[in-house]
Amino acid sequence: MDVSQRESWLLARYAMFSRDTAGRKHAEPEHAYRGPYQRDRDRVLHSAAFRRLSGKMQVFTGEMGDYHRTRLTHTMEVASVARTMARVMRLNEDLVETLALLHDIGHPPFGHAGEDALAECLADDGGFSHNHFALTLVEDLEDRYPQFPGLNLSQEVLDGQKTRTDKTGTTDWPPLLEVQLVDLADSIAYNAHDVDDAMVLGLVQPGDLLEVPLANRAARHLARKHKEIPENRRRQALVRELIDIQVGAVLTKCLPELSKSGWNSADEARRAGYCLTPSADIAAEKRVLEEFLYDSVYRHANLLEVRRRAQQQLTEMFEYLVRHPNFLSPPYRARIEEVGIRRAVADYVGGMTDRFCYQRYDELIAQSS
Ligand code: MG
Image 1 (cartoon, rainbow, N blue to C red):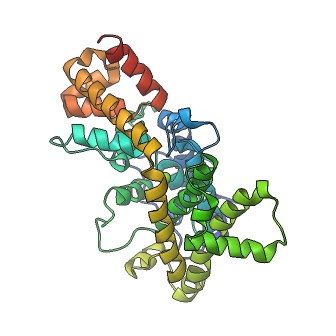
Image 2: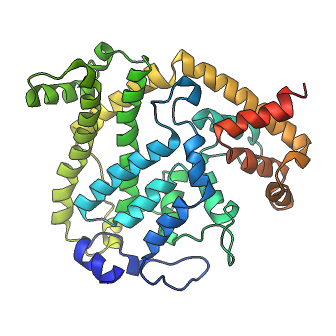
Image 3: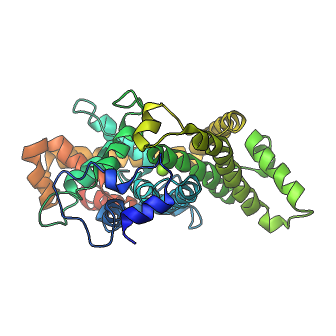
C-alpha cells in the first residue's frame, strides 16, 4: 500500500493529505516509500539543530539537577501528545510529528532569557525570535544536501512554523488543524511537565498546587480512581492526570464537532474558520494553571538569577563577536556580507547549546579580561 492509499484509509477528510502538498521550494523527485511529511520529519530529526536541543534548557538549567526536562525531552513529549491526539482525530500524524519536532528548534541558549537578550542586541536590526530563527535554520543554516541550502521542507511545514512567528496569521483563516494541534500539545505538555519538574526541585509545594483548579480537579479524579496512592507516586499520578484531562478536554469537545462538520478537505476546515480548543471550563482552568506557573516557577528567584547571568553573558559575548568577527566559525563569517554582522553573530550565538555558550564565553571573555 503506498502513502496515498494508506492516508485514504486512515485520515479524515478534513486532514492534510500528502497528495495535496504544495511541494518544496526546490523540486525533488518523490521518495520510493516515504511520503513528503515522513521525509520532512526525518530531515528535522537528522539536523544538527535538532540534536542541539538536548543541550538547551527548557525552564531549568543543567546545574539544577538531572531530573527535569531539556528542550529535547520537552519536544519529544509534545510530539507524543500530538501524535496521540492526531491519531484519534484522524489528522495527518506525519505532518503533526514533523511540526512538533520542529517547533522549538530555534531556541537560543538559555530559553526565553537568551531570546530576550538577543532580541535586545538586535533591537535596531529586526529583533530576534526563536520561532523565526527556526525558519532561518531550516531554510538557510542547515547545510547537508548537495542540491540546496537548508532542509527544503514541504510548504505546509514551513507555513505551520510561520504561523508561530505571527499568531495573528497571514491570512484570514486559522492554520491547518495539524498546526493548531501541535500548538495545543505544546501547552498541554509543558503545563504538566513544568508542574512535575518544579515539584521535584521544591519550587512548588503540593498544598499550593492543589489550590489551582486544574490540579485540584486532577486530584479529585485520582481520589475517585484509587482508594489510596502511595506518597512516592502521587506526583507522577497527578502529572499524568493533568495530561489526560487536558487532552480529553480537546477530544471530547472537538471530535463530535469535526465529525458533524461535513468538511471534505483541509482547506474547507480552514475556510470555515474552525479552531481546535479544549472545552471552555478546562480552557479557563488551564489559564489559571499557566498564571500559577508563571508567578511561582518561571519568575522564581532561583530562575531570575540564572536569567540575569545568562543575559549578561550572552550580551557581552554578542558585542565582543561584533567587534571581533574573526572568532565566528567560517560559515557565519561568510554570512556577514549577506545578512550583516549583527544578524550573522545572532545566527552563530542562537545555535549554541547552553554548555557551548558558557564555554565560548570563558574562552573569549572571561579569560581575556
Ligand atoms: Mg515548546
